[in-house]
Image (cartoon, rainbow, N blue to C red):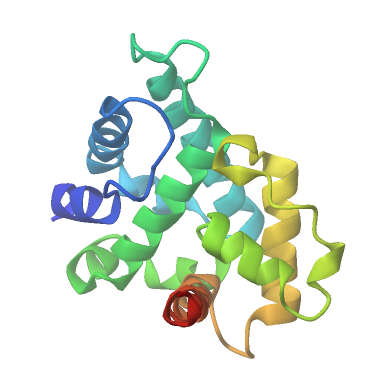
Length: 185
């Protein structure tokens, strides 16, 4: 089940323009083998972020081992997006959620950032305080933290988790793209 979730949540568009095709398979393989039991020791939001910080660095290291990706190796942003998508999917999967006691982590999870979500956050009231969206390649821990805090404090509805907010913002962004395409000659 975990291997299936890794394969389905890391699709071709997830890591578009992040390097060689092996990047997607590397992310899938890493997440399929991730020990979800390590989250049993997580007791606070800070511990959750610390745990996914460690996992992010491990996935970045796996990307750097790809022979065809020397200078163009995916960076922190690609790894973090992959992990946040995967954690959302594992939390929303009844079997894995129950087996690994992931329900308690959902309020601490991050929004998986990409250009659609990042730019939609910036377009929200007060979003001008966010740094310009750096692209997935330019996303780092400090910029990620600013976007996560803004999403949690300014955009999420009361009781809405960031994984759920991601789906809502994605729908808003894709509707804008569709509306713009309809207006184009």
